[in-house]
Length: 184
Image (cartoon, rainbow, N blue to C red; front, side):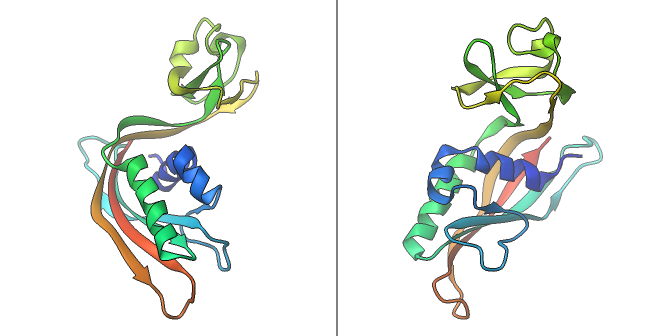
């Protein structure tokens, strides 16, 4: 079974709008003590699964958008909303640069060999699928283990972002939201 926290974190960490707001400050399961802001914290808080389709959980994920200003916390939340709400069948995982200059998502974990190189390898389509971006992937390297993190089949916000202020922690503002995210 895939790690739902890792899949959601990887998806958010690859989103340009979120990177512009929080950089690499996306933490799971919680923000570390003294973390610099702005930041995002997330964790799986429960959810459902079905015995009829093993390996396809539907976790409920709590996402906390943190900033030292309530307006900034809300802006981070909007970026998370734009990244997740209503998405369907999104591959989350390693991105490598193909020989044609386009990005390719790994769709099957493997150790890279000439036959699996995107797009000149004879078997590349078994391991890679073209991604929407160009030139953002890492350079493909033979012998590297390319993992598949997972696939987000759907994401729907369960509880809309709530502005929270903790009076015990000055200048830490948070927007809290809950998401139903079907993962494979």
